[in-house]
Length: 218
Length: 298
Ligand SMILES: Nc1ncnc2c1ncn2[C@@H]1O[C@H](COP(=O)(O)OP(=O)(O)OP(=O)(O)O)[C@@H](O)[C@H]1O
Ligand SMILES: [Mg+2]
Image (spheres, rainbow over the protein chains, first blue to last red):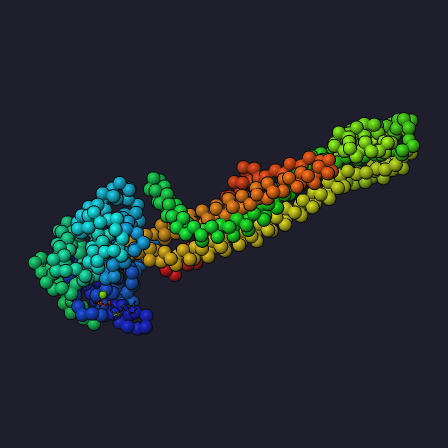
């Protein structure tokens, strides 16, 4: 359960990115978040894994007040949240394989099991056989898929994605949407930011729309 | 436990890869550290050699009582009687001048002595005391000096004491040197780790987003600092051994002119391990301080 309770966020400098946002997302829900550029979508997502902290109001995740988590506890929260940020944030000094492996290493997975999971993840995003390549040699869409594989390889219960299909052609975008839907069907709470209104239409997801930092439709 | 080992071996490999990834920088840092450590380590070894030499030359402090060159067996017997009645003596031994000459010849000075026709040495008594007490030494030697037939009373302990005081001073200097230069080593590591953190910035950020704990992120840097310290320690040891190899021949040649045999001893296993452990500790400390100071900013 993800709960935003009257959340506001001002960035240093005073810009108000979110204002009075209250939102409940039930476990296993599929939520599509949209809104104009600068509406505060990325900001809203970043509050969930405590990358940003609310200026006022509270974000609850599974009955835990995120802003009250100690510095030591935040990593364990993040391990349970698959994250695809707007900028792919891959590590360009190592091959695709090691990029996808990283969350498992951080989580202390036994190497054998980790290798199987990485292989499965590569397969799911259609990059099997390309694990030795470096991110710099991949297209924007392929990089995005590596980031997606990295986000779910640890089997988180919450998956958050910021424009995961931004650099993909429509056919691939639909495949990625399928992928997110399949995680969701397996019980994962999925929150996706996208401009593409058509993308998840066939599953009639819950749609949340932000404008100027306020929710206009929940 | 297995997981802990796995995480450490991974951090170790990562640190090793970073070291190996920039061999020139690694070599330069290790050289700076090695030279900084070689000075106190070399000083320590030098003092050790001098101390060993001093121990070899004189065991327990002794009093040498030299007789007048004109004194004969009668005077010697008289002195022996007086010594017998001194309660504080542990032992005494009469060394006739012939024996003294023989000893001197055996110690390698035969060539020198062969040139001298007459035995220049006096008869002597070598005396050891029950307890090592400078006041007792002084009182006794003052009394003995007035005995008839006594030419000279010499406290062999005087130079031993002076030497041991010098050695003590030397050890203090070595300690201070080790402290100051050890600080250099910490600073060098501090700085390399700072640069490491800058170059690994994106990895650190991404790892944090993926749920890495501070410990997970710090671990490779600790290993890096320790490994670099160990490299520095090895270079220091190599430098000390190099110094010994270079010095052995000239020192032996010099000693030979005095008829003494000197074999320079290098650092033993314990000393070597101590140098490496000390270097590893300093590297670790530099890393720890640097990580504490710089990771928060990433
Ligand atoms: N770190 C920051 N510091 C200051 N202002 C910021 C920061 N991040 C975002 N903002 C501002 O907050 C507002 C909301 O930004 P946010 O990234 O949440 O928008 P968005 O809805 O994701 O937009 P887009 O669709 O372009 O990605 C923007 O006006 C942006 O300039
Ligand atoms: Mg955004």
